Length: 288
Ligand SMILES: NC(=O)c1ccc[n+]([C@@H]2O[C@H](COP(=O)([O-])OP(=O)(O)OC[C@H]3O[C@@H](n4cnc5c(N)ncnc54)[C@H](OP(=O)(O)O)[C@@H]3O)[C@@H](O)[C@H]2O)c1
Image (cartoon, rainbow, N blue to C red; front, side, top):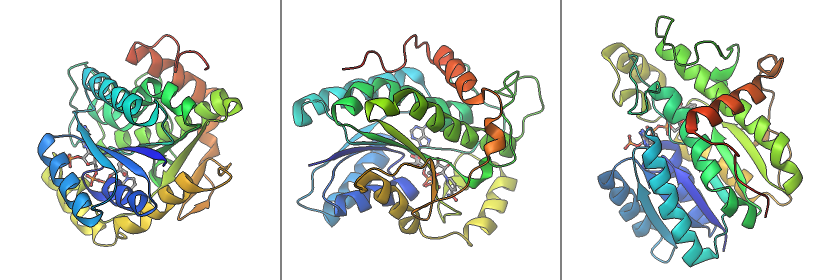
């Protein structure tokens, strides 16, 4: 049985993806932010799939100590249940912040969760991905287009904070991370993808945001597709045999992404910066 780990799986796209992978017979490990939301999601998934293999973990993935704790728990779990192997890691947890706020590590919160949390969790689970010849999928967005990474001020410490600007930049980070990951690890049989889920009717814009963001999101989300529709792309990438070979997918098909964003050495620069911010010296450790 193949095993998948999904972050942000207590609602929206992550929950629908957990559902889709359970339907396909995966052993699914969901990660939520709080114990309450994780138990609630586990209970409804177990009700829908009483014979499925499913388990839950939780932690505030904006905080690097929490990513490490959750990673330790998952690695221990995988060692007992799958001889350490992981087939699919889906870095999906994401949030929007109206105002400039930082984590305990001093990192701007959207950047901390939408990019660095997935980067650090992937690093921690690389041995398991290697053992499982695994795939890593990032939930990006079409909003990464026409955006640039400002390497001199990636966390908006000097510029006026822009909620949307900071969000778009993190979604571009997802694409750049997938690109650089493939450049480094595809030769080992590992592969990363970035998914544009489209505009999806979820509650993301209502969580810890201000009145204007809530208002805009209320209007936008009404035009969004159900999360189950976007989950199909994740399920397709998780199960495709042989593995899909393109980078960026929408609606189960490879589509164009913003190649201007790749001018120069942006993927490498982001990778190096992310390693420094996470205190990593060798991403993923040694080959098996
Ligand atoms: N909805 C769209 O139209 C759209 C479009 C493009 C991309 N996306 C991306 O899709 C992903 C999922 O978003 P969604 O729309 O499905 O929204 P969502 O339902 O709010 O899902 C976000 C998930 O991330 C979790 N999360 C939030 N903060 C966390 C933290 N600090 N630590 C751990 N987990 C945390 C949430 O848990 P709680 O509910 O407990 O906070 C929830 O399970 C995000 O990366 C988002 O950027 C969404």
